[in-house]
Length: 116
Image (cartoon, rainbow, N blue to C red; front, top):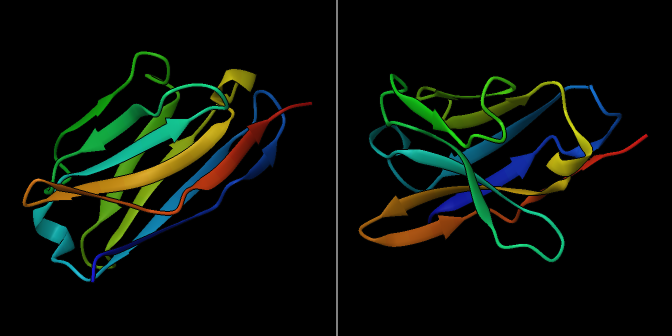
């Protein structure tokens, strides 16, 4: 079955960096676009970044543009999110997602807390 497992979250000071990973299994990773979402307390889940199945094209939410980088390794079946210059408002649970035959598949999420 489709499995997405995020890792790499934690506590970081404002201005710091953190790298998230998402291990994918149970599907042909290399032919599907991938997404990172986040959900802060009391807020709706929002799209952070997306990457095409080839890795050749990516898009970012305005709030993270220039600070976050999404990437993927289609040999290792891994999705990544490098987050730099983190701000307190980046605090959220981060999820990876894919869409297969119109069905959304989510990971369990990883907590990122930006605080001094």
